[in-house]
Image 1 (tube, rainbow, N blue to C red):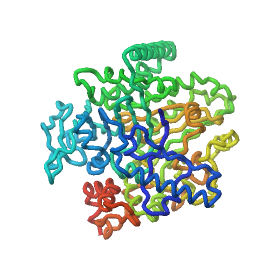
Image 2: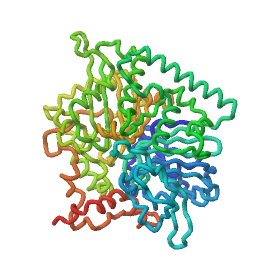
Image 3: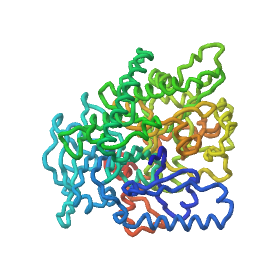
Length: 601
């Protein structure tokens, strides 16, 4: 089983939220990941929305599904053998509530967790060393500690709730962050690998827009194991031979690890995870127990950045996409072809022109577009919310507005804005026909001439798209030509040189042909307008500036309101206070770390 591109199920604050759901996307909940046969909420068919009776029936079915999903997942959960997590942060109270703690403890499940930490003292965002909820076996020693056994304690009963090992990936040069979002769940008969843009918080999984990749890898017996290892080795040898014969000056350091399995082995090794069955054996020995052929046969790759090493994500992405272009040479045959690169990011870092030009050169096909006879068009759309969009989100729902602090714009040079590359999520001001909007949207128009009956997300619906807007924490790259030939990346990489070079980051890559084969759609449906229209483009007006928290923070709170928690209206959950606290996790952490914003008159 494989799901190339899923979205998270968004928390329903009120009954109207049911009407605001995007009709075209598949969604999943966090706790469903631990079910052997989880259910994905399918997109509605367009014809079903034409009749009110069918709409009412669907709402009834969704409410029934909600009740079933909220039942004790322990009853449907196949025994879990081992767990591996990587996340920037973890909301411990919520995280524990999602797991069957009793079953994990009774089955002696190995749990390894890597979280971003302070390189000096080993602390993570939600402190464990000075917290009575945690019992630590030994103290962190800089440059020495690889992992620390931790017990999570119920303070009222002093009962051990959870045993886990906190893993410390190394930063050789003393900088970078752990930003990869990975979950690996070993069941009795298969291994589930999840790569997403979501941290281990309720806010990430239920307030912010995220994307999720899931693959289930079947457990294999000894004879099958040997055959599959030989197949993997043959594939690596073939790729190495191809790489040696093809442009040695590319100097791509990732060519030796050219399939999903070897890419996963490399990542887990670099992040200091151990074989959960036998710590004296390798991660490779552990993963040899599972069949990766579904990823190999569909040319699916893991794109990872390893800080302070020669394994940066951009070089890896370059090697994959350039091989894809070579294997699909017909893309380059048409001299009037056009390409659209769309990058939706929840954070934009300081951008140097030379780096971004290299970034584009790596990702676009290597066509000589300086040739006078070449009519190749290359266009870039950067998706990032405007000030007006965040204001609109905040007005409609205060908590979603507060959690928009996770969306960060750090580019003091305003490179993308000055070069007219920025596009909003949706065309909020559809009547604005600014003359500066010479968009040359040949890509978009040509795409619409193709058979896009399956691309429901590209239709211009008459419904109010503002109702679909939520703050997006996802990080997505889509590159395609006018014939829908191209590829998709999604994962943890934000749009910054630091993200692609200096952090632990992880995402997944696949071709649009693979997506169409497995999902029946030309491109993955998005929570933003795709392809972007001219009405999504930034303008030199009051709404034409990117959302910058430090400049615009007063939009989402006033000093008088800042000490209060946002109110969840019409919430039907029993534990309303806990939900409220977990749903505003990032906001609460921000308040603790940035008191200066809350002391202003």
